[in-house]
Image 1 (tube, helix red, strand yellow):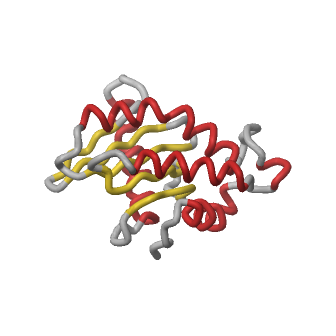
Image 2 (tube, rainbow, N blue to C red):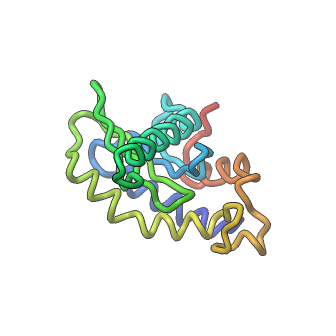
Length: 163
């Protein structure tokens, strides 16, 4: 694990959460493991990560069934808010949970513009199996260390881990 990269990832997530109308921001792997998050106390970020990964699977399956390719962004409009799921690469995704009053166009733009910086920070923070990117080879961090990575990144963000 690279502590500086974990701090950078947490800072980027906090910046995104500071946007008006956003309740939660998380970076997850495609299995739903949480790398970092910032959310209100009543939000169970681990459950959010698992549910978001399932949402991405459904979106990708729909794209494959229709012959339209993988999802580049999925927006789920709910009665009491919106969830935006944005793949960062083949392994990682950004999850944004917003209130109904949030500007949807601004949220989508935020997700797209922050993609590169979030991906770079996440890749430096933890290396996923089969990846040659980041610091994990020398630091020994993998998604197998996800519980430690999640606790560390969440702690950097100043949030309590909700369990």
